[in-house]
Amino acid sequence: MDILSNDGEIKNSLQRKITKLALPAIFENVLHTAVWMMDTAMVGRLSAEALSAVGFGTQLAFALVNIVAAMGIGTSALIARCIGARDLKRANRVVAQSFLVSSILSLLLAGLNILLAQPFFSSTMEDPVVVSLGISYVKIITIGVIFMIPTMVMNAALRGAGNTRLPMVSALIANTLNIVGDYVLIFGHFGFPQMGVKGAAIATTLAQVCGFIITISYLILGKDVIRLNLKETIKIDINVIKQLSKLSIPSCMEEFSHSGSRLISSIWIARLGTISFAAHQVAVSAESMSFMPGHGFSVAASTLVGQNLGADRVDEAEKSAWGSMKFALVLMSAVGAFFLLFSRQLMGLFTSVREVEALAAACIRIAAFEQPTIAIAMALAGALRGAGDTRGTFKVGLIGTWLVRLPLIFFIVFVFKKPITYVWIATVIQFAVEAVLMVLRFKQGTWRKIKV
Image (tube, rainbow, N blue to C red; front, side):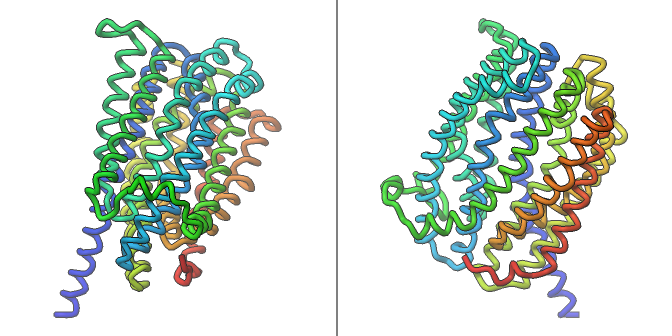
């Protein structure tokens, strides 16, 4: 009985640790996604052209941002190992070097986004109204990129140390500002002029600046187990940067692969017409909320696996991974059921354009069947990244994206000339393949022997 009792206590303790890390991370990402959804819903009240411009412009502006911000995965993995090994001095060096590198890259990317906006829209979109609105939108939100990347990387550092609450609080305040700003500036309330798409861009930029101030101030003031010492950021530590690069480059390449494929598929989908593309964007916005449980438990798996490996508790690391996956699977399957039952009502929240609403509802019903496999893939990917196996997740992503999803979409759009719903069927197949490959990679066990 004592053994059974101890096993039960250990299991409950693990569940508490998982949920303590995952729930703030889920809520944080719900907030981020809610802003995107609110942006889409408010802009969707303007026109299909405005909706397409913001959707396409967001992909351009944040594609490169997400690629560079993926270095936060390496930062989180390193810090988790340091915390597990109780090496706070090394953890703070990682924080300082991550802030330095992310700040430099954010400035470079801001300039690149501004240069690419006009040629990108002009070469990919035929509607002149969409082109004009999109260019204006990208140029404004690019200002926020300068603040966004360091914030994302520093939030990743906090998660690696086991603090998922501060990133959540930062997101709550910043995104509340974003939503209020959207309402005021897009439609012109409280004495402000009606700015439409430009208003949405300004609100997003102000929110990014706000999030930066909150997160960076918290780290500088030393309110956590880790802290940001600005004096250390001007001292280049080659060894730490090499370690960050080793872990982060595969993650950055993985995000580059995903972002590149999204841009390519968006260009192809745009050929189906403005209504189809707008419906696709609306469905993507709605579906993105379903990723939140997967992301939250991915964060929990990453942190717990990294910290347990740092403390030489390999078996506990494995239990953390499977436990996180089970939580994600249950919650995301429930979301899938919701998509099936309330697709039309959900899409009605995003757009008042009848044709767009009906087509988007058909897409989101198909997306319901992705949810269980996305849960499995996301949670185990987080576990592998926390162990330092960023190459493994990169390889799985390459296969799912470039050997499954893109070839299928190409044939659907250009060869068989099928409607947008068939594109969503292709993504169901993609995530099923990725889930199987992620399980096989984790069971292979090479992650157990990785040294960082």
